[in-house]
Length: 365
Image (cartoon, rainbow, N blue to C red; front, side, top):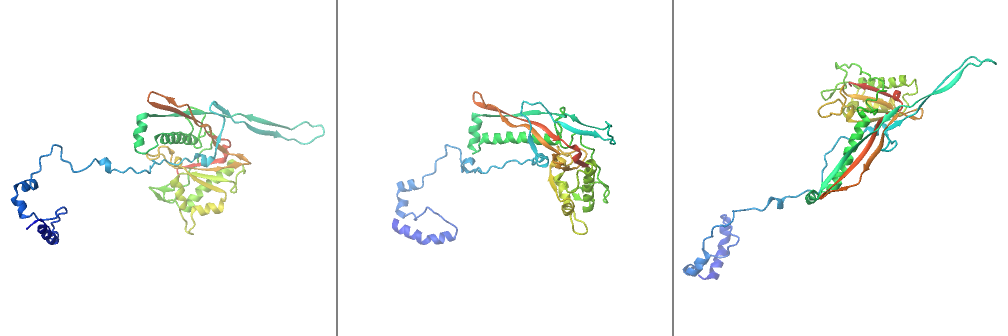
């Protein structure tokens, strides 16, 4: 049997071999008898594989089969809500250390008329309450090798550092809008010393004063609405009637307390609907700073869940605003031997409460 015959026979037998599980992809023929008798051919065909001089390996470097997703996900932070609650304004610039906010109070008295009487007088009293600014900073720094290595991962490192700096400054700014800066005449929306004392929520049928107990809304819709009514009645009383239920108001509370407003009464009406029908110009904003202080909310209120009802304006005068003197000042980039640095500065006045009587608070809901 020559080579051609051996090849034809293998082609005929190949389906039978494959059915039996012997799949030899690179084999095309049987070995002809004359090849077996030829010592040189047999030596060439059946020569043993020599031993390896390198370490046995059946793969390739893992990095060659690793895909880097071009979509970069950023770690999320709690939203910054102080400016949404109270508004925000720029006052002065970064050179200003103290700000004065003039207040004028009109005075006067009348008496009975008489042609020759000189009784009665009018006047005005002025005060100049002050606030102190606080400048703070952060520093970006990066090196040549650092940029090159991070660039291999297709990340624009300088852009990420710029965004991180802006985020850090804004987070602290937002914190001062709520709590001010200790040791300065710089106060926040939650701790301004001129605010009236916080109310205590009414006792609930569940057995406590809370709206939510162990992540369950235990206060009824009517009980929650009654607490908000108490806040509005406090505003009406404090303002001498300048504030009423038609005034533009902001209800500021924690996200969980806001969800409690979905509680529904026996008439299938929830707190949102009660507020909409009875306090039509109410705006609701939630912020985690109004929640109780805990391990997951270290910036919360120590005494428990907090809520404020704020009149946006009274007699055309703004109740208050968050104020800054510098939002983001970038200083010159400093070149080092193989790196760069840049300082970024911002400044805050905290929350400027011009009319504290227009804010009512409640703690422990």
